[in-house]
Image (cartoon, rainbow, N blue to C red):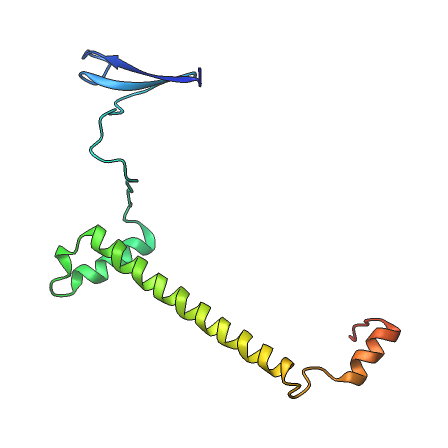
Amino acid sequence: MFGWALRYRPGGAETCTGSWDWVTKAGVARCYTGHVPTTRPRHAVTETGAVADALEALRAEPGGGNVSVSELVVIGARTLTAQKRAQRDADDALLTALAESVLSGGPALADPQAADQVRFTGWARSA
């Protein structure tokens, strides 16, 4: 066995009334409902620190008090996706420009004399 099992416990003083419990080697995880309405991941957010500050600022705005957490997650995920794509596009543009410069024999990116000196004498840091 995997070290856990699902067991039905009828109601009682020390148990949840008619609940399914996960029985583990360490004991019972009480009141876990075996029948949940979705197979999707669920999330809990505690409004502390930066989360509380951001939500207070939003709720202070007109119409900001009725924004759902799922709407905030969607907006935040889309914003972060756009930022990451913009950063990736900027990185790709820099790499493309560097590759074109190297392939076209454009301006030297390093001093050839300094490169020869390092090749023959080794790398040394100056203080």
